[in-house]
Amino acid sequence: EMSPEERHFQEKIDAEIKIEAKNWMPEAYRRTLIRQISQHAHSEIVGMLPEKNWLTRAPSFKRKLQLLAKIQDEAGHGLYLYSAMETLGADRDEEVAKLHRGEVKYSSIFNYPTRSWADMGTIGWLVDGAAIVNQVVLQRTSYGPYSRAMIRICKEESFHQRQGYEILLTMMREGNDEQKAMVQDSINRFWWPALMMFGPTDTDSPNSAQSMAWKIKRMSNDDLRQRFIDQTIPQLELLGCTAPDPDLKWNEERGHYDFGEIDWSEFYDVLKGNGPCNRERLRTRREAIDNGDWVREAATAYASKQQQKQHAA
Ligand code: FAQ
Image (cartoon, rainbow, N blue to C red; front, side, top):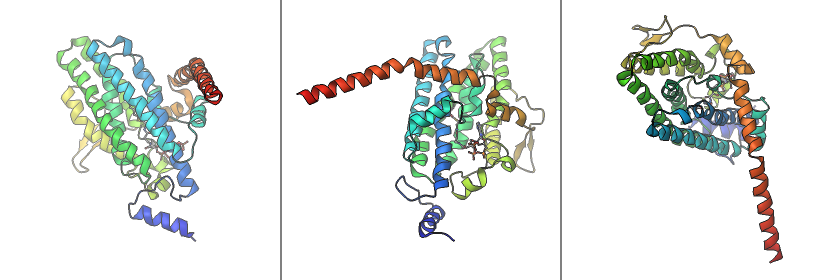
């Protein structure tokens, strides 16, 4: 039996009316959103680290400015998402502390190393590309503040995707053989991890059924993954590159590309903290907090001095 609040909540969901911060909501709906939005925010923040690696080694001043601007956008997305999370009553410091203790998740993709300049192109093209496919749909998510955050973030993300693709196009069209090989090597390394960004298959996705019923999720993990592959293959062909998947093939009957089996043991291993860079990423985040301690202490000391002066006056 539904309570009047529950019934009213479900009627709004059914009628595509957004749930806002101060509206009544089931506790599990609130918890699911805090989980997903905090995870999303952590991904944006940790996602800056693989790119930071190439900031000082960008091949030109123009490329350096572009990369710097992209990384700053990601910081902004993280802060924007933490704010959306706070509207649900979660505490940002507490959630960040959980990240630093290794208790919560962020996207698996950011636990892979960035070995060449081509990786900056591939991340923009494939990783931001996958992020957009997921987030375009989340613009219609049922929680108002999250949905509005997605609208703004998608605009910036599609710009990132294009700048990444343009890096790769330039390398393929104007580069020497070594530079072209660098692009193919980069795609070989990021292809499968990018497909894993959409999460486990629908049959192994414990949160999907409830999140779809609440319209937090609007499309399933597998459907989004298929949409991403279908969209990406023409771009891959235009580059003149290939995917490291012998089973990738257009299926006329389905009207989609068929593709090979994802190595799920690798995915779950990364989720458990055993990917190539998990430890390094968390260590970098913890060090950033520790190294900034004196700034926060100084700011707090300054603020209390100002307050004392005001009281004295
Ligand atoms: N990595 O039952 P489901 C970006 C977890 S884009 C790690 O299917 P759900 C932009 C999942 O949390 C990346 N964990 O879960 C950028 C759950 O664990 P839990 C961020 C994953 O939530 C670009 C468990 O597996 N985007 O940052 C992953 O219904 C370039 C079972 O899975 C978002 O976060 C994974 N790949 O569906 C920045 C989008 N997949 O919490 C810098 C918003 C699944 O129960 C540079 N999130 N898990 O312990 C979502 O749409 C959903 O949360 C899914 C997962 C689709 C990711």
